[in-house]
Image (cartoon, rainbow, N blue to C red; front, side, top):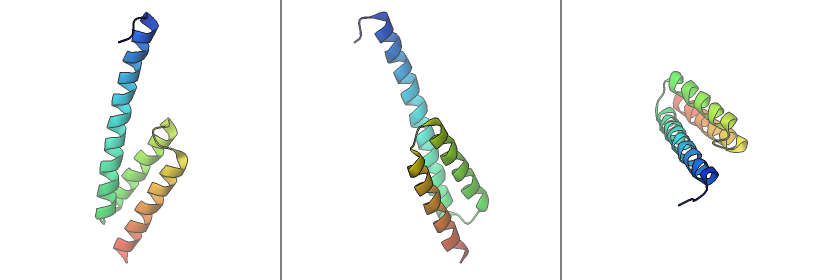
Length: 81
C-alpha cells in the first residue's frame, strides 16, 4: 500500500487504466472471434476498426494489429471461396 499522496494517485490511475485496457482487449478478442467465424463483412469491418483503435491507443502493438487484421482477412477470404 502506498504511503505518499502521489503514489496513491498513481495507484488509482493505474487501476483505471488497467480496467480500461482490459475492457478494450476483451472487446477486441470477442470481435476477432466473431469476424473469423462469420461470413458477414460488417463483422470484419467492425473488428478491423477496433483493432486499429487499440493500436492507436497503444493497447496492442502496431505489428500485432497488422497480424490480427491479416488473419481476419485471410479467414474472411477463405469463407467466401
